[in-house]
Length: 81
Length: 226
Image (cartoon, each protein chain N blue to C red):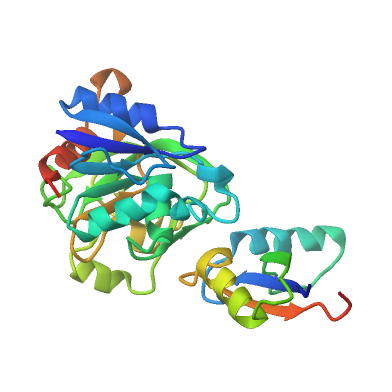
C-alpha cells in the first residue's frame, strides 16, 4: 500500500502566531537572523493498492485535512515505503 | 417554540444553552450528534465546547456528524441556525457560514466580558445598529478570517464587532486579531448566524449581564416551521 505524506500549511497571507512565537525564541538560543518560521501539520497515511492515489488523497485533504479558506496542502508518495 | 440544541462529543455549553433558552420561554430539546432527525425543532443552536477534542482543527470533525446533514438541509430550507463559539467554528467548517476561525493572535485562551457593537440588526439581534452589548467571550481559536470583510459588511452579513464600552472598534478592543474586529456573521440568506461570544452565559442579571437575551431571544423570533 502506498504510504503518503501530506503537509498542510496556513496560506502565506494568514498570520501564523505559532510560527512567530517560535521565531522570537530563536535569538535566545543563539540563532540570530532566522526568519519566516511557519508551523503546519504533517499527516501520513496508507492508501489501498486498488485506489486512485491522487483522487483519494486530494479528496481527503480537501474535505477534511485542510480548510481551503485558510490552508493549502501538498503531498507525496513515500518512495521508500 | 421548540429549539434543538446539538450535543456533540466534547460540547460543553449545551446545558447552559438549554437553561438560557428555557429561561427565555423556549422549549429546548437536546439533539444527539448521531441522529439525523431534528425532532420537530423550529430553530437550531450549535453550542460551545471542544467537539471531538478540537482535533485537526476546531469544528473540522464535527461537520461530518450525521446531524449536520440534517442541519444543512434545515438551513437550506430557510430554517434559523445559530452557532455559538465552537458552534460558529463548526458552521464555518461546514461552509454554512463564510470565512474561518483560527488561533488567537496572542496565542492565549481568552476569557473575559466583552463589549460588542451591533452592526446589522434584524432577525438575529433585538437591538439597534450601534448598540453596545456586554457578553462574555472564552476561546483560544476565535480569530475570524475572511478575505473580503468590507464586502461582507456591505452585504449586511456582519452581525457584531468587538468594541470598547463606548462602541469604538479598534485593535485594542479586539481580543483575538479577528479581521475588522468581526465577532459574528450570517450567511448570505441571513438565516444562519454564528458568533464567538456566549449569549447563553448572559441572560440572568445575577451573572452580570442580560444582553445575551437580545441574541438568544431573537432565535425564538426567528423560528419557523421549516
